[in-house]
Image (cartoon, rainbow, N blue to C red; front, side):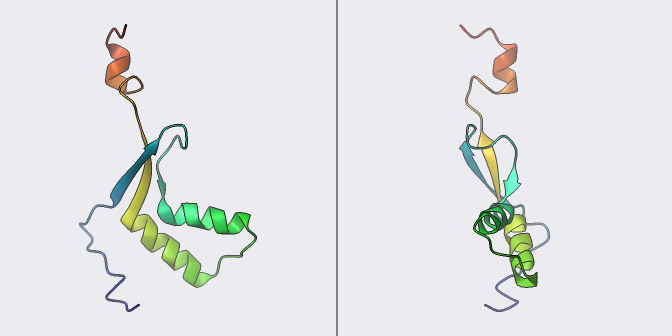
Length: 80
């Protein structure tokens, strides 16, 4: 993989992947998820791992998907 492959334009927003809200409550980067998983298996992060995690965080964000009943606008309406 070359430096050109890792380039992300500064104005490019990260892609957001929505997951069910019972899996997560706040937005997190994909690099952070992978770092936590590898740490749980006992792998110590190195400099390359930190750079890859930062690059993944800039590209992909994982966010909770809210149902129509858990959205702020649904709470303000009378849901029966």
